[in-house]
Length: 439
Ligand SMILES: Cc1cc2nc3c(=O)[nH]c(=O)nc-3n(C[C@H](O)[C@H](O)[C@H](O)COP(=O)(O)OP(=O)(O)OC[C@H]3O[C@@H](n4cnc5c(N)ncnc54)[C@H](O)[C@@H]3O)c2cc1C
Image (cartoon, rainbow, N blue to C red; front, side, top):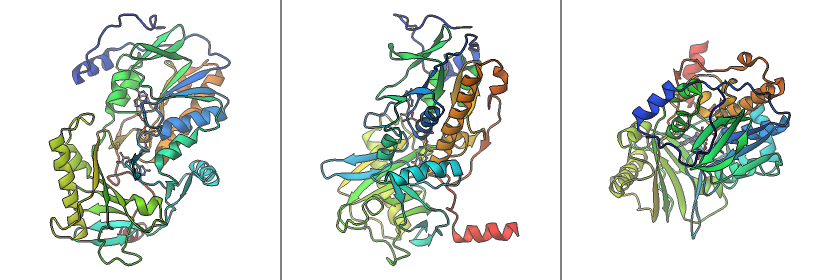
């Protein structure tokens, strides 16, 4: 099947209820491209988060052109988000807080960013914070990295000076259609170009809808099996420093995984992290809820009722007081706050393959969830998919079955911290237990 003529003037309107998406996902016919692959192929990458960006970068290394489409109005990055509130400005990393490195290929990429001054190490103390203000530092076994001016500026710089990658932003790809051996992409009926292969570098509801009528039933089914947590983020700016118990060199933390508080799983001091030499306020903190709290208090993230936002803010501030061992209502009021729901925050299951690729449909998926739930997982997934697509396109597509990856893998649960999985975040106690177990 080669698909129908794309860009119909009066496209059929499809419903987007869960039942209708499911029905279309499971009933669609598989596309089989049989036309020869161009000598100078171009790949469309839908999603400009870490996985989509590293996919584009690695396709370029293999001499293949691509276009990255991303919905971001303020910049690329997806869950590498940095929010700047004017006029002061107040700066917050409002999703990924920092990242660690364990794989040599990711290390090579990060070394390049270090050389260009895009990232640096975050050496401020982080650790586990238990109810009442009991802080246990995490031994710094592996370095922690941050974007020098936040995560989003890093994302925006990853593709700079990369001549073979075109970036289209803000652009929300709403339809994929195959015709005459090519993929045609469009945004609400507006054509966005034709491509030899496509990469889905995003997940969640949006990806399910896009794939439900794509002619890629195997890819669509795998995407539908993915389960994602929801996490509330509270960005809060305080005039004065928050009273950290004990306040010594080791207990005055800059970031903490909070234990035993329903509404709080993480607190991070953006001001100390991003501007360590700044001696006076304001003090900008990012707080995340637990996934359990996010699930119980889920609302449509594009349309958060004011009453819900207010309730969540109060619950999270109270959570900060409980975590720090302060009496209720004693924490100074932040002078500026923003509440946001990450409705598709972190994967809770994974097929455990670096990427998924359907050679018959010339389509692949990359993203953090294929390998874990961190920036490193997302980067490795993007890199590996790029290399696989390059091998496939260069092979001329003669033996497609040899290139199929992850189309039928079972999913396993992912374990880890509420805000992601990083090597080196085990506390001393956990490390000791792990060592005792292995001897
Ligand atoms: C609250 C929170 C805290 C986290 N903390 C950390 C941390 O400290 N360290 C860490 O390593 N990881 C952390 N993570 C995880 C990390 O952010 C993710 O693993 C990583 O950013 C995922 O990258 P990705 O490319 O897979 O997806 P995303 O970053 O989600 O990128 C997908 C992109 O696709 C775009 N998109 C979606 N649909 C379309 C469409 N139809 N057309 C065009 N574009 C589209 C989206 O707008 C988005 O920009 C955290 C995540 C959350 C939510």
